[in-house]
Structures are given as structure tokens and as C-alpha cells.
Amino acid sequence: MHKKVNSTNSDVIVIGAGSGGLSVGLFLAKVGISVIMIVKSDKEVGGECLNDGCVPSKALIHVARQVNAAREAEFFGIKLVGEVDIQKAMAYVYAQQEVIRKHENAAWLSDQGITVVLGEASFSGKNEVTVDGKIFSAKKIILATGSKPRKLQIDGVEKVNYFDNENIFHIKKLPKKLLVVGAGPIGIEIAQAMCRLGSKVTVVQKGHGILAHDDQSLTSILLKKLQEEGIVFHFNASLEKFTSPTEALVKKDNGEDFALSFDGVFVGVGRILVLEPLKLALAGIEVKDHKIVIDDQLRTTNKNVLVCGDIAGDLQFSHAAEFHGRIILNNLFSPITKKLNNDHMSWVTFTDPEIATFGLSEKQLQDRGISFEKLDQDFSDDHRAVTDTYRYARTILYITKGGLFKKEKILGGSMVAPNAGELIQELILANTLGLSINSIFNKIYPYPVATRINQQVIVRHKQKKLTSGLKKLLNAAFKIFG
Ligand SMILES: Cc1cc2nc3c(=O)[nH]c(=O)nc-3n(C[C@H](O)[C@H](O)[C@H](O)COP(=O)(O)OP(=O)(O)OC[C@H]3O[C@@H](n4cnc5c(N)ncnc54)[C@H](O)[C@@H]3O)c2cc1C
Ligand SMILES: NC(=O)c1ccc[n+]([C@@H]2O[C@H](COP(=O)([O-])OP(=O)(O)OC[C@H]3O[C@@H](n4cnc5c(N)ncnc54)[C@H](O)[C@@H]3O)[C@@H](O)[C@H]2O)c1
Image 1 (cartoon, rainbow, N blue to C red):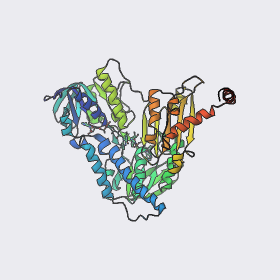
Image 2: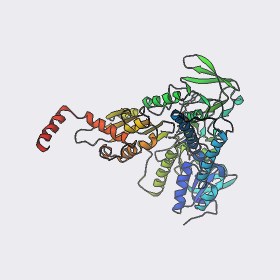
Image 3: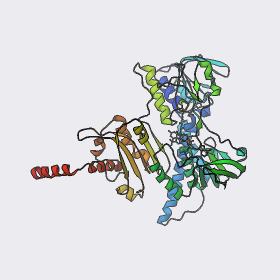
Image 4: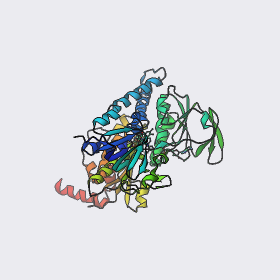
């Protein structure tokens, strides 16, 4: 049953049709709540994830992986000639976006019972927004307007061939020399993809390493692989200015400076929230330090306006936006409220090898005074890692300190390995459900699936617990029962 609204009043207004807005709006429409969804334009349905983020980046990474695999096959005698046709690579990316766009567009949303309004929304009252002079009101308003790439603001920037995630997936020509600014997930994923497609890539990063939100003992393994593929890194460095359309002056923290030449610059230096056009003050929504003030139920200082996704100023992932959506939906329908808690959050950086991280980090565990054991294991003895040459891979797990009869649970962890994002899923499930590590220990894994590494970590841990006392006990038992 679709409850269509023809007027400008509805139960709920959702501003934004990205991962966050869609997850809330579609469910509400499905159960018969009237929804007006406001989105800037039809081509912005699907938000950043579909249009300028996850989907095009993962599709391009897929192409780059194919190219790399073909190059690696040269080792077995095949000769590879020619260059990547970047227009064909991009055509592949667009084709995959189109598959998803079939069910992420204004007409399709209307078919699902949502009243779609195309245009830019701003608040005009407590329960009221305005689009092109037309007023819309609702009992609840969900603000899911996302974030934008932070721009590099240095002298000479207007002269260079400047890319960020909003235009890199529309290039017609591959930059021969690409300067990547920022070594967060955006910079690193793009750096490897572009390198594999044929660009000579140099990365300039303010901090001392890549992927600051992941375990540095694992990111250093990825860094080594990226350097082996030919990417050059300059750490503790930032761009001072562009001295010409093809040259930048880089300054190191130690005061040294040097010039770098390029024919394209890709910038991935974090995200900003665009708040001013929303006229939040008109709805009584407070802003502090350029972030919307929210409580742990994602409510703003106007309790009828909730935030969902990047705009919340929390973790900025598509699945984080969906998680916000689940909290909001629960609280719209239930007196037993759900609160925002990222203790079981996870993320994956889709490089090769991937880095996957979940649960609580070592620092969070220390800060909270939780006693834990750290299990740290490389894959050098793992048979699948041997056959498929990824013995460099490694896992870190944090588990509760258990006694002989105390359940040992997984608190968090991280993995660097090809497909780590898939391999780690059962550990995330055990973490989310609070299962004992025995759930992994007792599982029968087909030999030699790569996931057996999860069991090996636990087996090693248990073997270390085999004290001389326990060995004596087992020997005695063997004499009786064996
Ligand atoms: C290159 C790149 C790769 C990424 N890869 C991943 C990944 O692999 N995995 C992952 O989990 N995350 C990834 N992310 C992050 C992910 O894309 C975002 O966290 C996610 O898209 C945020 O969703 P959202 O709904 O909050 O906002 P968005 O998807 O940005 O949606 C915002 C919506 O609001 C609309 N809007 C904005 N202002 C207004 C207004 N005033 N009126 C009307 N409509 C408005 C926009 O048109 C849009 O539809 C990536 C990001 C980038 C840039
Ligand atoms: N696979 C994924 O899930 C995925 C992929 C891409 C993006 N994302 C999301 O998008 C968000 C934004 O990613 P991001 O990489 O832009 O941001 P980020 O903040 O994670 O990393 C940006 C990096 O750029 C560096 N930096 C900032 N200014 C600089 C300068 N002037 N010169 C040199 N270095 C500079 C910072 O030190 C930082 O390490 C991520 O936090 C993540 O939530 C997720």
C-alpha cells in the first residue's frame, strides 16, 4: 500500500537521496508512512556513493586489478603489450553505475510511493523546508545531505589540472604524472588504481603514514606493496604552492623544500559539511565548530529534525549512513530507543591488499581500561597464503582476557590481506554477537579456504595456553583413557 501525498504536507520529509536518505525513506514508504524526499536533481539520486564515491571508485579499482593481474601473468610467459584505454575503463565504470541507477532514480522512487521533489531545500521553520519558494512541512524531518570534498586552497591552485572525487571519474585522458595530495582512504585507493592504469603516481601526505585510522603495523605492509608497485610517497610534507600549472613546491616538516612536477593533481584531504545554505537557525538547529549539535539518538537541538549519514559528523561511510538510518527508524517506531554506538563498526579500504578494521581499537581499549590480549599473526605458514603468494598478510585481534572457564570474546581487530574485507566478516559477526572465540575454533573449514586464517589465530592462541601443568594433566588422562 502506497500512501502518496499530493499536497506539500507529509509525515516525514527526507532531505537527500544518498545512502542515508534512501535507507530511511524507502523503509518508511514501504510501511505506508507518507514521505517527501527532496534531492537537488535526478542525477544526484544515489548520492555520493553511486555517483562520485564508492561505486565508481570500486569499479575503477576492479579494472585496475584486472590490468595488474594481466601484468603479473607475464611471469608465466605471456607478453602484454599496449596501454590501458582510459575511455574504455571509464565506460565500464559508467555501465556499472547504470545498473544500480535503475533502482536509484526519481521515477523509481515515485513508484515506491515516495513523493520526490527536485531542488535545493533549506529550512524556513521548525517543521518546514522551502524548495524554489514552495513550502513543505512534516512531523519529522531527516537531514541526509552528505558532505563535500575539502578543496586545496593554496597559491596557484587555479592553474593546475585539478581532480577530486567529483571529476576524477570523468577523465578522458590518463594523467601521465599524477600528484596525489592526502593518504587517507580516498587518496590511497585512487593512487593505486591510477598507478595500475598507467600513471606515474607521487603521494604527498601531511602525517607520517597512510590511513591514519588503521593500525600502523598493518598499514606499513600495504605501504610497502604500494611502493613496490612504483608509487612514491613523501610523508610529513604538504604542498606550499603551485609554481606553474605543472609544478608544486612541497615543504617537509623539517623545513626542507623541493619541487614536484605533474600533469594532474588529485586531492583527497578530507570532507567538509555544507551547512550555510540549509539555514539551520530558522529551524532552531544549533551548530558548533561547524558541526550540527546532536544527541546520541541523532536528534538535533530541534527534536523533530534528525541527521543521517555524513552530515552527522560521525564516521563517513555508506554503511555508517545506513546504520544511522536503522537507529532513526527504530526510534520512530519504538519507545525502546536505540543510541548511536560505533563499538561494532567496521570499514575496509579497497586497495590490494585490502585493510579491514572492526570493533574497538587498541587505543580505545586502553582508554576505556578494558583488559585485553592482543593476538598478532602473519600468514607465512598459511597454506592458501603460500599457494596464492600473500604470505606478507597479517591479522591483529583483541580478545577479552579469559580464565579457564571464562568466555573469551573478540573485541576488535584488523587484517591486511587480499580480500581482507571478505575474510574478516565472520570475526565481525562473532564480535557483534558477543560469541566466544570457540565459535571460530570449533568451526570446520574446507581446506584450504583463505578464511582458515581466522581459525589459525585462535589455534595459536590456545596453543600458547598449553602450560606444563596442562600437558601433565593431558598425559595423565591419556594413560587412563587412551
Ligand atoms: C571516492 C570515495 C569513495 C568512497 N568509498 C566508500 C566505500 O567504499 N565504502 C563506504 O562505506 N563509503 C565510501 N565512501 C563514503 C560514502 O560515499 C559516503 O559516506 C556516503 O555516500 C554518505 O552518504 P550520505 O547519504 O550521508 O550523503 P550523500 O550520499 O552525499 O547524499 C547526499 C544527498 O543529499 C542531496 N542534497 C544535499 N544538499 C541538499 C539540499 N540542500 N537539498 C536537497 N538535496 C540535497 C544530494 O543531492 C544527495 O542526494 C566513499 C567516498 C568517496 C568520496
Ligand atoms: N573504502 C572506504 O570505505 C572509503 C573510501 C574512500 C573514502 N571513504 C570515506 O571518506 C572519508 C574521507 O576520506 P579522505 O581520504 O578524503 O579523508 P581523511 O581525512 O581520512 O584523509 C585525508 C588525509 O589527507 C591528509 N591531508 C590533509 N591536508 C593535507 C595537505 N594539505 N597536504 C597533504 N596531506 C593532507 C590528512 O593528514 C589525512 O591523512 C573517509 O574518512 C572515509 O570515511 C571511505
